[in-house]
Image 1 (cartoon, helix red, strand yellow):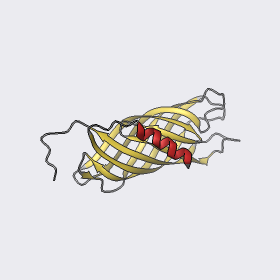
Image 2 (cartoon, rainbow, N blue to C red):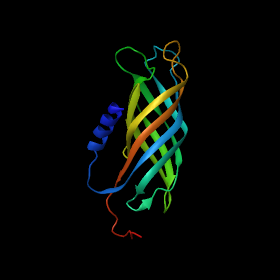
Image 3 (cartoon, helix red, strand yellow):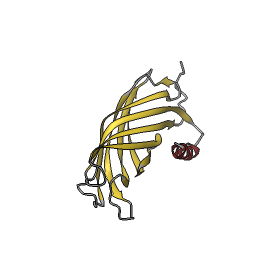
Image 4 (cartoon, rainbow, N blue to C red):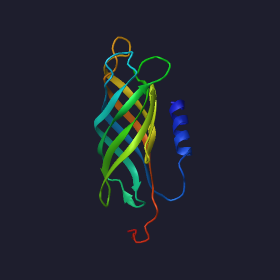
Length: 170
């Protein structure tokens, strides 16, 4: 738990403070699949979804986040260079596609993402920074590579944009 706190401190500490227009805390639950067919695989693809993102906070400075939304993603990954294969020890890039309702509109974001996974993981997009874990559903990293798992994340949502002088705050 201390490790997760230290990782979160590292992410939050690198967030610029000027022009913040929204922020919140979120949890994500989803199914994740990996394409690696063997324990010795060195790269592959990943996909998340269907999933749910549930946030508490503000978006665009004044829009209250009103409930859960959808969360999906896909991309590629490579094994760590230590030769241990990709079984829950890899780095990846891709795209996350998520959205949620606010008091003013339904928000939909598609953002590039990066992650590192070594038991537990960290990921980042322009708006999301957080930690995650994968609980294997198919595979065990001993006799068979993990191909499907439950993805559970705790993230911070931080949005930055130039203030809009024409926007009226209710």
